[in-house]
Length: 127
Image (spheres, rainbow, N blue to C red):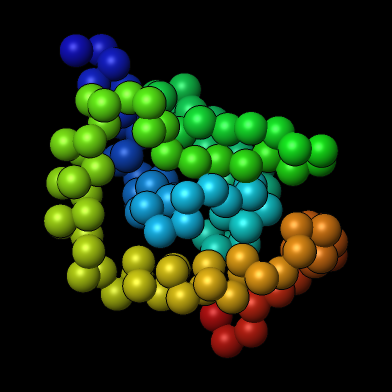
């Protein structure tokens, strides 16, 4: 029961639900891409991602300087939650906007994205 509560708590935040939903379409995203589409500080995105990894919702891997996140496909107990979230949020305008933004973000090299974030600006226009 404690593990289930940890998962529910990890999904009880709008930005964490946005990350969760984004990873349905983008099997893997770099932390800098997630930071960009959430339009939050890197530390804030990191805190959200850490909570989701601790809850077992996400897996991560490091490749050089970059940390990539994906849904934890190894945990079959997450399948009903994934299905429920897709069903309930599939028509959300916010999530559709997120996916459109991520399509633009995904083509930007992580190095450029991180440099822009360090400069305090966004790589996306018309946000």
